[in-house]
Structure formats: structure tokens, C-alpha cells
Amino acid sequence: RSATSKYSEHSQQLLYRVYDIFITDMGYLERYEILKRIVAKANNPNIILAPFEVVNNIAEAMDVHRRYREEGWEGSMLRQLDHGYAVNHRDVQLMKLKDFKEEEFTVVDVINGGDAKFEGCAKFIMSVGDGSDKTFECIPEGTLEYKRQLLIDRENQIGKRWTVRWPDDENGGLSEDGKPKYACAVAERPDSV
Image (tube, rainbow, N blue to C red; front, side):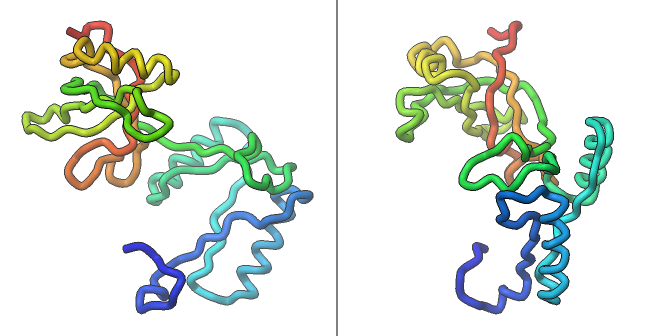
């Protein structure tokens, strides 16, 4: 159920997780201290300060990330502490850390990617491979030119096996009917048909 801007009986179930504040000329540690005071002053059980820990290297980051995943979080965010809040763009000071799954699937069809950006580009229809007729859509990795060529050569792709990558989550990155969500075909298998 999607949230609305109007109060409803579901409003009390919403949690607002606060992780940053819009101050461009202040490092994150200082901003986090301000957030702690704001959340405490709000005194509302539905407003929660997102957890934050300092790590000193990638090994520590991965340990914290694994613990967060075990607690049910989708992933982690890594940030440089001395940067201000970046406005209206992705910034190198903040990066997502997510787990991914990889598996091989067979292309059963190649269709036009469809929307304006991917018009004339390949989108693979992959067999789930469980003996059923279930399929899922998968966009191949690569340049637009490469994806256009895959669509032109669609007949040559049918029957080939590709390594597919998708983000892991509490459901294994799968939809309710067992299909990978947000899948990307990353490499054609060299032993493919």
C-alpha cells in the first residue's frame, strides 16, 4: 500500500528514518549530532535516527554491512565524513553497498527495450529454468550501441545462456513468483549454444 500525504489509519504505522540533514558546508559527524537533537526533541516513536558507525577500512565496512543484512536491512551506505551534504546530484562522498546474486539463465526471446532511452535496444526474456514456463525481463549490460546490435542479432541470442546479476534482499531478490527483480545480463556464457 502506498503512502499518501493525508492522514489515515495507516499513518501511525509509518516510520520515518532520518539519516542526514540538508547542510552543505558541514561534515557528516556534525550533521549527525544535530540530527540526534532534532529526533530527540521530536519525541515521536515514528521518527527514528538511522544507525551510523565509523569504519576504518573495507574489512570493517563489510563486517558492519553483513551485520546490517542479518538484521534485515537491504544494504549499507558508505560516506566520507568530511564532506557537506550534496544537493541535487549523486556525489562520490556517498555510496551504496548492496549484495548481489548471480546465476545463469537462458534467453527465450529478445524484444525492443521500449522506452525513449532504450528504443531499439535489446531486452532479454529469460527462462526461470525451473521446468515451468515462467520468464522474466532482463536488460543486458553495455553501451546503447551494443544493446542495439543485440536486438538486430536477436535470433542469434535465443537459446544462449547468460550470467544474470540482480540485487539481493530479504526475499533473495526474487518476486513473489520466484523471478529475479531488477535483473541485468552481465556476460554471455562462453559454453553457450
